[in-house]
Image (cartoon, rainbow, N blue to C red; front, side, top):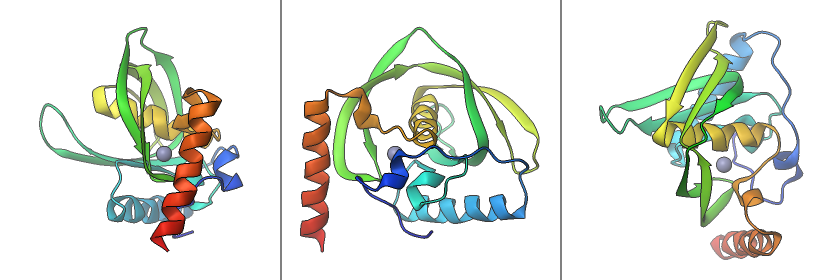
Length: 169
Ligand SMILES: [Zn+2]
């Protein structure tokens, strides 16, 4: 569980399981995920991406207003509402290295999750944070950003990933 999985690894297509309670074990997994995410480096990681089918997401990004680095872990994250307003932004994914595509998503979301103290947090996110959270929470249900593209474009990108990984070896 210390390597990032790449497409077409089937674990990326599986649904992660809800956590009953956030215990030391989940906190350790999140800590490991944060290390892997920051080393990559990436702005977010879902547990599926390291082969763990638990609903855990970690994020790390620069806040657009304060310019502060924000990093936190989410357990059982669930988006409860999406703004009608959509924005198109270029996205990439650590599981599809070196590939990017413009994806339309909601500008603002409201979500709930458990924090490391097992407390339920309800929050709103917008901008880059909303973008990252939507991308990562998709991973927990086996969904990848390329699923928003036509199957033709998706297959081209997945083939390019294979080529990229092969050349890297
Ligand atoms: Zn991703």
